Length: 128
Length: 128
Image 1 (cartoon, helix red, strand yellow):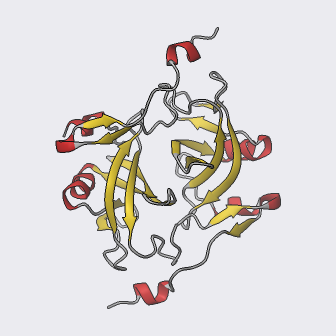
Image 2 (spheres, one colour):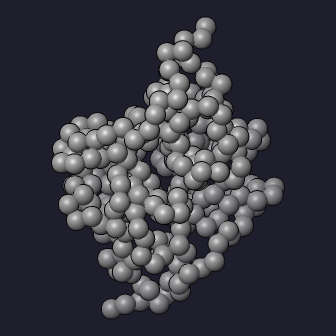
Image 3 (cartoon, helix red, strand yellow):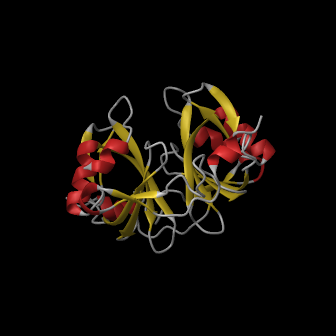
């Protein structure tokens, strides 16, 4: 794939992927891909990542059902970051928020929650 | 600052910062901050980063004049990524595009340019 030659994976073979909700422009999450998970993402049309903490592949939504259908895959001038437009089913965040970015810095270095929790994470992730 | 305790900097002391244009939702770039550049960003209201390749601090726009005025600083559930809303002066990309993400994957793994070049980078960066 010609575009993959434009990409720079880091010393661990990974590249960060920013996930944006196509119809709202909202940033849902950021996670890491390697070349294999990127190719699987393209082939299946669903986002697949590499978990650095668990050292394994994962499809977004494999536990929760909250998958991401890929609409566009962009990459930056340096080729070291991906920007993927998706249609999100349910909540992107494992804490039950639509976006993982549900907190912002507030006065004097404190922070505030900026959105409503959509689902109870205990209910989503307690499936057998 | 209370929120900084929620953040996880990587083994190099860095955290990725996604930069989003506040009024359009467009993703402009992704770059890395350390704790000092994040604090400077908050204190000055202009984005400051740590360059991994040059091993130095830089303010976005210090050469080009294309600065970013900070409107909001969000962070994700894991505390390992920042999402910063800005008002962008001029072009964010050193290649003269508004956004560094000016290319997308096209048919059969090729790619296409998805936006117009705003400025000639030779003119912006040839200042003495």
